Every structure is written in structure tokens, then in C-alpha cells.
Length: 335
Length: 73
Image (cartoon, rainbow over all chains, first blue to last red; front, top):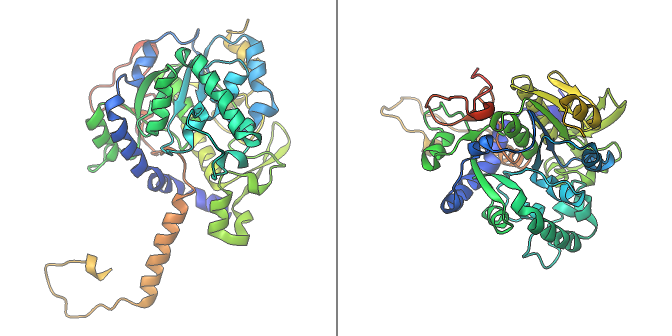
């Protein structure tokens, strides 16, 4: 078996190791602020009909001008954005009904909401290195300031579906921008196990536990169908991979892979052809695991899933691959 | 490792832990920690439902929202 796929098989456990302690610590810090359950979102009027569109922050979002086309399409269903895609949405004039945030990292994630406290470009090159939001890679401070203003302006129209694992800096920023917060717990482990952390957390705060699928984009898709009850869910910007011309140094886990494998780090990347595009994209063990998990979940979900990313490596059983305009037309909420 | 193993009886044979065993355990531990840095931002729990809201009856909420739409395996 290829090295990358072998590593991917270990990541269910590894993710628990990576985020459980920080997520639970954040849940305690967030406890005084916790109010509404995310289940209350299911009763709110968020867009028309039974369709939702999930916006993730992969490179196809920009390459395919998905947001500009979404705006032109007149889609009137529910728009659910991953936190990393919020800036791109607002800059394109698309105000999502819901933004989802889960990652416990206390320094990085607040940047997706515009960090009013940022006064100098940080040493951490997380944003400069990657293409998730290109605006951040060229002028971090300028992009941050624009985002602060956009989020402040549109915040009152956006609901934030925040996991209790999210950094207090993020939840405070959402509240400061006027967003209404709706809370949920990440499902950390098997709630039927005797010593389950998920069960203990649920006892502590009474919130539902959501099976997040490894990343915020998948969590947003779960929220769209399992919480909002949408039966047709489209997706844009969910590549779960890197464009064919991306240098390895610009990939999300590059420093970790070099540390683990030295000069042999390239062996951890997996190259696959997207049959709809005829292009070979590549992925790393984490993104490959997200893909495998998504395919498993899509096969069991009570919704039809339409991947309108027009790029990347998310294809397979249980997923319809269609252009964005076809999805909008099919769900009948176009203008 | 020996300090973690407790028994309520004595064995006749003395069990010697080899240096290789110790090294192997350290390598496994290092590998586990290193791999955890590659993990995601939220867990995935295989063979469980999309939503769990305690052990009470999971009624279907308004508009079909909030229900467990994936059966337990």
C-alpha cells in the first residue's frame, strides 16, 4: 500500500490525539457563553426550499469563480460556509446564512473572521503558505483589515454554528461582530463506550454531538442535512486536494511531512485523476482521509449530495458531480 | 514499562525487558505523536450516527432537522 494511504488509515485515532485535549479545554472556557443549541437552527427560516449549498475554501472556489457564479445564479436556498471560506464569500457579495467553525487552534482560526487585534504579520506562515484564501497570502495585514470591516458589516445577518471546541477568541469575535451563536459539541468518540468523552461533554453542557468527518467543510455538509434537514446539498470549493501545479511547499501539512519523512516526504502524497476533468490532482494523507470519510458518510446520509466544485478529488458513489448552474436549476431556486 | 505492570501474585520466572523492546515502544510513541500532527480539525467516529443528543428518543424535529439520519451500524 502507498505510504500516504497507509498513514491516512491512522488518522481517525491521530485526529483524536491532535484535538481532543484542546477542544475540551476550549469547551470549558466557552461554557459561560453557551446559549442556544445548534438544533434551534432547524426551526429557523434560512433560505427557500429543501436545498443548501455548502461553501468550502479549496482552490477551485477561486479557479472556477464559484461565488461570482453563485451570486449570478440567483440561488435562494440556504448557504452554509466553512469558516475558511467566509472571507471569500463576503468579498464576492455572498452573505452566507450560516458559518461553521470547529478548529480549536487559538491563534489561527480567528483570522478567518478578521482579527481586530492583529497589528503585525505573524511568524506563523500558515496563511501566507497556502492557497485557501489567496487574499491572505499576499498582504496579510491589509486583507485582515478588509475582512474585519466586512465581517463587522454583515455579522448581524449571519448565524455562527460554533463547536464548543472552537477557540474562545473565535466565539468572542463572532459575538462581537453581531452574529447569533448556535452551539454544538464535536463527537470525539463512541458515545456508547463506558468512558466516552462525548457522553461526558454532553452531560456537562446538554448540547448535541455532531460527527464532523475530520474537517470543517464536511462538518458544514453534515449540518446542512442532519441539522437543517436539507435534502439536496450542493458543495463548492471542496477539493480535498491540491491543484496539479501546486508546489509541495505550499501544501497544508508540508512542514509536518518533512519532519516525519525527511527527503522522502514526496512519497506521502497521492496522485489521482479526476475523471470528469481529465486532470491529475494530488492529495496528502489528511486530505485523502477526509475524502475517504466523506465518501463513507455520503453513502449513509439522508440527502442527495451534488459536488459542484468542478475540481479536486471528491468523487465516487453517493456523490453527483455537476456544474453549479445545473445544481441551481435542478433544485428550482434559481432566478 | 515494568513500573506500570502490577499483579497480585508472584511469578517464578523473572521477565527481562530488552533494550530493543524499550526502543520499539519509544519509537511507537514518537510515531503516534508525530502522526497526530497530521490529523484533522474535528474527529470522525466511524459507524456512529451523524448526530447524538443523549439517550432520549430522537424525534424528528421541524422540517426533518435534528434527527439521526444515519443508522448506527
